[in-house]
Image (cartoon, rainbow, N blue to C red; front, side, top):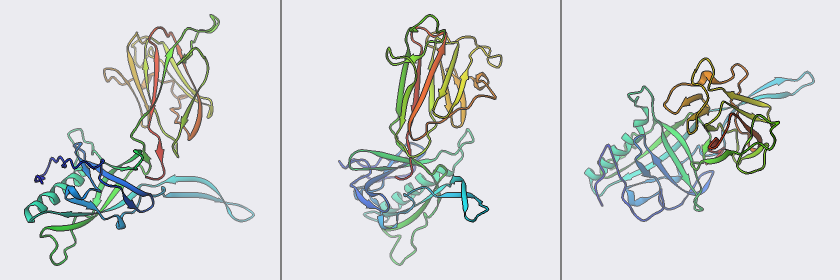
Length: 329
């Protein structure tokens, strides 16, 4: 087996599915697991052939999100739930690492330690990049969560351990406690001619049917989408008729001074955190209709929404992109 050295690692191709062979993991059943470090290197976690393996009996933190509940006492006794605040998640992940001899074991041990602790390093842009833990099911579905190393890569300090094998019990902090489907859902709509000259704002649609579009969020919680708007357009309005929230982007707003979007020009709108960027990276957040703008999310289930473009023409389009979020792995 080839020797694995730090800091960059390419695990051997063993013919196994990503992560290895499905194993029973607490709270979620049979699955495989892999970890992607901030450099993009993928580390299988349930494959003995890699030289390290998950000790499944000690895994925890893969179940439903923990919430802090805020309640109001009721005059006749009891309480009424006012707010449920999701809390950061901590995942405990034990790893057993081994080698044919001490040198091979230490190379693997050090490389794995670097792969996890690298999440705490601040990059040139002043940002820490998380790793990604992925759980895959035998049917091919996957869920991911971003993690930061917290502690646990110390070894067991038992007699005989540390020579050619040892185990570490990692604690991984998840700022966002929800699991995400890595496969993005995309809704594409292109402009069609208005059905009547009395309507000055042609609705964006994928077909000849004008009006609202139903977007289904199959996840367990609200998801915050990204919008890509392609011109021509002079005003773009996004309305969630289920919640009543809406926001509009005006490319001709004084804070931008660009003028109408021309054919092929694009703007990307992110809803969490709020961000509006023109195709060259310019900040266009001033083009939103503040303070009325509400950059809404998609609630679980069906969401009735409307995209409306003023000044649209051939090539005008809106792409809505989102990744469903789930309570459990």
